Image (cartoon, rainbow, N blue to C red; front, side, top):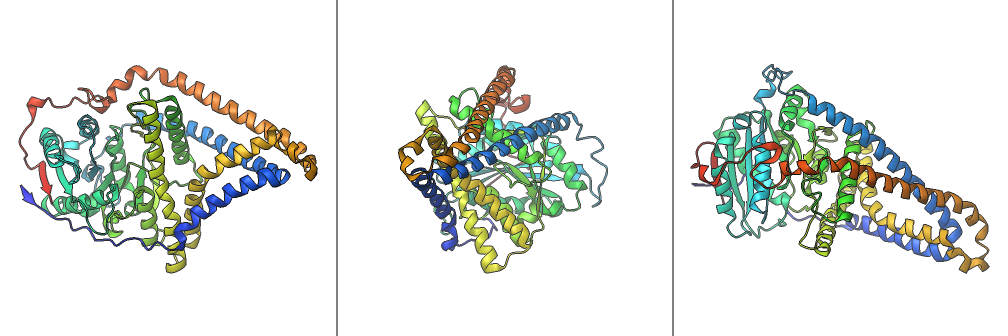
Amino acid sequence: MNTRSSDAPVFSAHPHGWTYAVPGVISWAIVSAAVVGLFFFPDQWASVATVFVGYLMLRMILIVTFAIVGDVRRRIWEKRDWTEDDTLPGPAAFSPADVHHVVLVPNYKEPLDVLERTIGALAVQHRAEERVVVVLGMEQREPGALEKGEALAARYADRFESIIVTVHPADVPGELACKASNQTYAAGIARDIVVRELGIPLDRITVTSCDADSVIHPKYFAAVSRMFAADERRHARFWQAPMHYYNNIWDVPAPIRYTAWFIHAAHLAELAMPFYEPLPISTYTLSMKMAEETGWWDPMVISEDWHVMLNAMFKRHGDVSLTPVFLPTWSDATDGETFWRAMKNRYDQVLRHAWGAEDVGYILREIIDEGARPAAQSVFRLVQVLHDHTLRVASWFMLITGYAINLGVERAWAYYDAGGAIRDVHPVLRYFFLAGTLAVACTIVVELLRTLRLADGLSAVSPSRSGSCGSVRPSSGSSSAPCRRCTLRRS
């Protein structure tokens, strides 16, 4: 067993200037405005709340419409044979069969059956034994991590072109204990092995950030290979599949089940919108050449998925885009031993996601200090990130205060003579709330009817003997010793 260190760059901590306070300042301003408006300016605030609810309704209509469009496209993509003529060369004189995929699976204290399910889904990819390199990014902070990684590598040694185990050292100066730091470390080692030892050209390699609980569609890499080989802008592209949080959908509490469905519907809709380009989330693919040129992942950023594309946008002066892959990746919804533990875990997950608000400060700093170009794209991304992070704060307060006015709070302030305009606004606000309630109720009923048919099929992605997508895992007695396809590396 050889000892390797990563060639990954060393990052310093973020310069936390005033720009990083912008999301918090705006969020608190909205909360304060909602409270002040409720008690002191009910007339004006009712109008503001009505406009906001109208915007939410329009957003809901767009999500429902394009989620249907996205689902139709999913059905078409799943029926297509992505392996047909995959040896025919593309514009760059290499074929889809010549594309190699490095899949990073950073993990920390993940159950063994969850990792087996994820690896099983990778093992059934087209040409996995010839073109897929799996990198198990273990953490030194986890006791027994190396042994767990080595056991998995030995067990699946003959299923991949190579399977690499890395152990990210603990307490590295200038790093946070997060997915980004693990991936950057693992990617540097994987790049060295795949390019230098296996002799694969860098411009024919993709790198995929894969969450430890992600079950990638069996046709995903065949589709990405075809698009990568045919795309002249392959080294300026991200590929993103819609995320379906369905692995354990019937095991989680009802509130989490509904939010998991809504998040998946919103993500599918955003990918299907022809006038909108989302940022990557969770599990996504990009060119290894672009990843190396832009410095991999910043190990001081907790929410690494949006940030890695924003970083590429600034490093490449706007020459980067995202292409949807309508072959869904299944993942776990947040769960827990009890109802309240599951809700607490969901809160912790949302809190981690909220760290992505620091991207607002990052974009502002690039615009102000570096004169980021193109300006229009930078401003669009700034508004996009700021909108998504403040909306979760603004929505609740604006809806509740608007509805409180609708229920008659203004009567207590009648001596301010603020009743006239409010009475005019109330019917509109009431109809918006009624329509919104009916829309939510309908989506719940439709989803229950639709997914009841899938309930019996969930065992295909459950941690049992069958791997994801029906793949059968090796039994415990079939483990083989490490070979060329099972390359073990540690710090």
